[in-house]
Length: 402
Picture 1 (cartoon, rainbow, N blue to C red):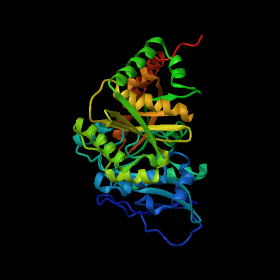
Picture 2 (picture 1 turned 30 degrees about the vertical axis):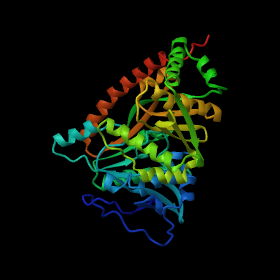
Picture 3 (picture 1 turned 60 degrees about the vertical axis):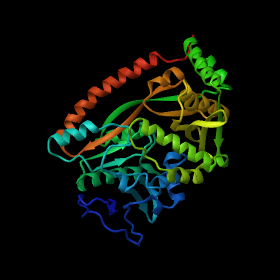
Picture 4 (picture 1 turned 90 degrees about the horizontal axis):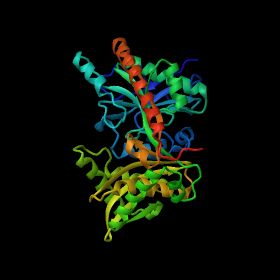
């Protein structure tokens, strides 16, 4: 039986005639509904689908929404897509109605401009992503393939019938990207840099595997920071105080202001994750003469650590690399964490022990003429990304194995 869509899309310009109010009964037909807040979903039910991925956890996403960092007022209107069978949640998708393209890390501004030049509206669009988080993970969360396919079909149906310009799924895993491509979505490639731990016993062990020039450069950078009198505290769990969070938020906002932009996350968001995710949080604070001067925030769990945000109140050569990379690598080695995802872009990470990995996004555009133009562009872009990956792999920082 085909699932039926029910729920609401909170955008006046969207035709929502196909959307019904949720029913209190438990129909035999699988029901797909839309909810405007993850708080309407039981944390245990959601986390059962999300697995161990921290940035897909109920706590992380709920903090984004309840703090007002990712909500309708900031251009991220939640429309979480859920599949229920006999009242049980069997699949879900983080889905947003977006009125802009900020905070996505997959840039489609040129597509929006092309629509505007032709007198058409690109926004609103439907987006499946983790807000402000360029991390690869399944976006169709399900207990089985049947539920996954049904939910994806519903997302595409919603995109076609609700009047949006497009549907986008950002940073799906490799297998999910292949599945989305099989469903007719266009795939876009990108590159990130991840540090990988094959079983290092110490930072020196890690350095010994690198080429001589890269090893020398890292040692020099670390010496500069140490010679400047900077020390570090690596804080987790309840060791992170409200004073630490206040300082980190100051650093975080300072980074955005230095780039003449506005921060995405507010202090309330950090207060919420400090309460609900403290055991999965690593806060690195740099100090000089007994006073904090920089901070870097990471999340970790299972075999992966996610480097997210950093900022400083004073410039010291090499401080960014030490706070964001070397201190974190030491932590990963100590905790036997196997992957450190350093965030979007950053070719400079290559010389510091990070290796290039491909990333993906999937796109559906309602208007065929624009879809064809984008498809041609992506074909050429993919060739360029493939060549770039090959070039990066030839420049990897580790010793060549005999």
